[in-house]
Image 1 (tube, helix red, strand yellow):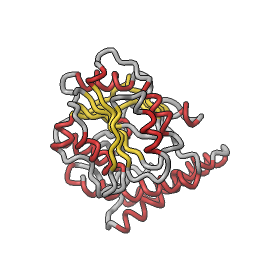
Image 2 (cartoon, rainbow, N blue to C red):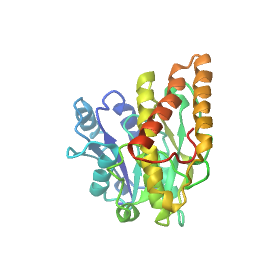
Image 3 (cartoon, rainbow, N blue to C red):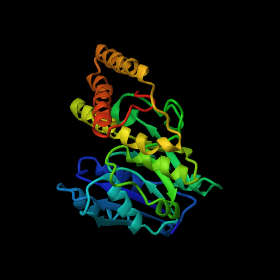
Image 4 (cartoon, rainbow, N blue to C red):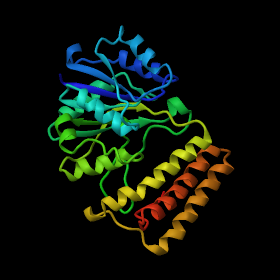
Length: 290
């Protein structure tokens, strides 16, 4: 088995069919049907997700469904999926996004290149949200500069490396993909950008849910930063903290004046969560807040 698609699923009935349709329509020339598999990990869904997935097994004979109920997080589900996978490479996607028709092939080609054992997909935000566009930067970064990172819903890695680094850290419930990227790279495997591997990302449509998500990200950011301080992740100068929070406020007002309430609440959520995280984990602010 050459490649395994790991698909965590929790109460995804609303959008799961779109992703499974996309998997069923993959255009692949470099792989035989027996060379790749789809591992769907149901993380104790209470909706019709499992029934929908079972229906698609008639169209996707390489689709396997497993239950994971001892934990509840994307990290846990992805790690369980990795233990079930037989592929030389693991590629991760989410149940509410939609992969492009050549995503599996593009990820396999990227991972097959010499010294490309860890790769990230390109994200498009326009098709499913009507806003934004294709990801501008090749990889996400921090300021001051540290190691790059990318969303966990589009990462690919050699299975033996995933196992060697211990998989995703299940104690980090949010921004677990950032922490994973840092840890893999510190272990000696650079993160590469697979430009041809496109995923259409679905943003949360509800403004308050977007605020809550950003707050959760902000709260866990100090945890990750504190963990990697000894590896060179820099602290933010104290005099810069009021300036950064002022910028958060300005950014929110700017979006609000444009009539985009959802976008205006996201930076506020991040700022609130970040402050809570610094206090809760006794951590001074690190790097750029926005």
